[in-house]
Structure formats: structure tokens, C-alpha cells
Amino acid sequence: MKIMPNCLDRGFYMYQKEFEEKALEVLRSGWYVLGNEVRCFEKEFAAYTGAKYCVGLASGLDALWIAFRVLGIGAGDEVIVQGNTYIASVMGITINGATPIFVEPDEYNNIDVSKIEEKITNKTKAILVVHLYGQASNMEPIVGIAKKYNLRLVEDCAQSHGACFQNQMTGTFGDIGCFSFYPSKNLGAFGDAGAIITNSTQIAEAVRIFRNYGSEKRYYNKVVGANSRLDELQAGLLRVRLKHLDELLEEKTRICQKYLLELYNEKFELPKIREGSTHIWHQFVIHCKDRERLIEYLDKSGIGSIIHYPIPPHLSEAYSYLGIKRGSLPITEQYADEVLSIPLYNGMTEEEQDYVIQIMNSFE
Ligand SMILES: *Cc1c(COP(=O)(O)O)cnc(C)c1O
View 1: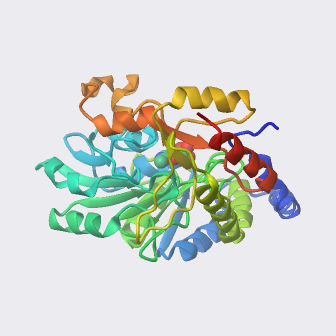
View 2: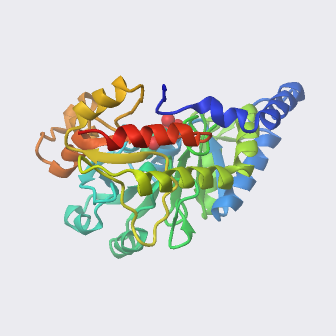
């Protein structure tokens, strides 16, 4: 049997008719950028998350850097973020000229809350929380720290659509929640797309203006903005997927519960779930000290796996200018050497899962 780490076409065929009808409807409408589909998606996604506003953008990275831009965070400012994130989180900070200050992760692969305060200086302006792999971070103490030090709070929810901390959706705890709808995310488009959510009328307006060359009214430009418009086709297709998001998340949860119950091998550790947090399983990430051998073994059995992420941002070439040496974030670096995402996707069959479990359990 051959099993890919991800299988995006399965998610398409589940609702093929609805996707195709919506695509044709948009193609035939004669209106392709920032129109009714975008307006409806924004309303529906805001309602889904419980935020007052949603503003559609062109990607998750745009959501992040535009978030910091409208909050006025830039050169000379520091933003606290976990060390073991996807590099886009960090680029959202540094595109604006601000400096990322890395904090080590906890056993749930999210920011270790007990290590935030020691990193706060008089330059600290914000905390960027990343709900990595789909599990909500420990938001209660984080919100408390942000309040205590008067910091902005931004959430990177690119992997956490629908995940909650104490029944409140990720993205609604701070000033801005940033989403990616890249095809592999749990709420995936068929191309690039992103959005921010916020409860602030002022922030929503600023992002709305910024995404369209800084103009509210055509050809009247208030600020030097960007072109980060969500297109009608993606918004329409996202509306279709959003209608089914809860059942898609439930299916993934079922698959992961089976993994949690049936995977057993002392050679690796299974993901842990924090009390009070929900995990919507963007990835099922194990930790394995003997990872290279496991990857090879899986590969020989026809099972694909992916490392999220092999090089932590502080050690990537792009951030060599920060001058942060190997050894300065030992837990982050250890995780980069241990983590492995095993096959997981909507539409995964029981037979495929049983095969993955059988092969993984017999690794020695
Ligand atoms: C995917 C992702 C992003 C970037 O989203 P794009 O839409 O690819 O720009 C940012 N942060 C995290 C944690 C992600 O997983």
C-alpha cells in the first residue's frame, strides 16, 4: 500500500458537486475580486469564530505582517514568539522591521508560558501566539501577561481553525487573529488565501483599507498599502468548505483518536493534549529520537511522512542576521530534530490507517 502524508483531492471529492457549482457560479458572474462572495465569507467566518469582524486577504503571511503593520509595530520593537514555529510567523514580524524574541515551547509544542515574562523588555510591544499543529495554546496566562505589561496580542491561527481554549475560539483572545487558507490547512482554499479576525472596528477598517492599496474609495489613497485582496473564486469555495468545517474537523479528530488509542511503540512519543484546549489536528506530530531511521523505514513500507519543521527559524539562513547561535534554544532545536508528522487527511480510509498503525507499531 502507498500512503501519502496528505491527500488534498480527497477533500475535494467529498463535496465535488458543491465546489464545482460554486466555481461555475463565480466564473459566470463577471465579478472576480472583492465582491459578494468575499463579503459573505467574511460575515460567515466572523460568525463561526465569534469575532465581530473578518477581513479577507491574499494569504496567511499577509494576514500576519499586515496585522503588525496596522498595530504600528516596526523597527525598534520586539515581538515575543515561540521558537518552534513555521517561519512565516516570524516573517510577519520582521517584514515590518521588528525583532522576534524567541521563547521555548512546552510539551504541547506551543509557547511555554512560564518563560515569557523573562523575555519582556522595554522594547517589547506584542506577543504572537501560534496554535501549532492545531492545538490551542494556554491562553489564560498569556492574556494575563499581555494585560499586565500592556502588550498587543496577535494569534497565528493558520493551523487552528475552530480550535478552542476553554470553549473560546482561537483568534479571538487578543487584538487580531491571523488565518491562512492555504490548501493543506483545515479550512483550505484551492489556491492562496488568508484573513484576519478582530473585535475592533478600527483595526478591521484599517486592514480593509490597507489590503486595497490603502484606499477606501477608489483612487483616493489614505496610506501606502498593499494588494492583498481575496478573490471571489477562493472566497466562494471557502464558503462551501466552511459549511462542512465542523464535520471535517470531527472526521480528523476520529482518525487521530484511533491513532492515539492504537499506536504504541516505545520508540516514539504521541502528541499530548492540554486540559482546556481543543486540538483540531492540522498535523499528527510524534516525537522520535531515532527519526531518520523511522522515516526511512516508513518510506520503504510506502508511507510518506513530513517534518514540521526541520530548521527552526533562528537557525535558518534568512535569519542569520539575528546572530542567534545553535544551542541558544535547546528545546526548540531538540524538537526540530525529533518531530515527525504521519499521514493524516480528510477522507483517509480505515484500511489506510490500519496499515500506518501496523507499520509504525512494528518499528524497532
Ligand atoms: C501556513 C502558515 C502560515 C502562512 O500562511 P500562508 O497562507 O502560506 O502565507 C503562517 N503561520 C503558520 C503557523 C502556518 O502554518
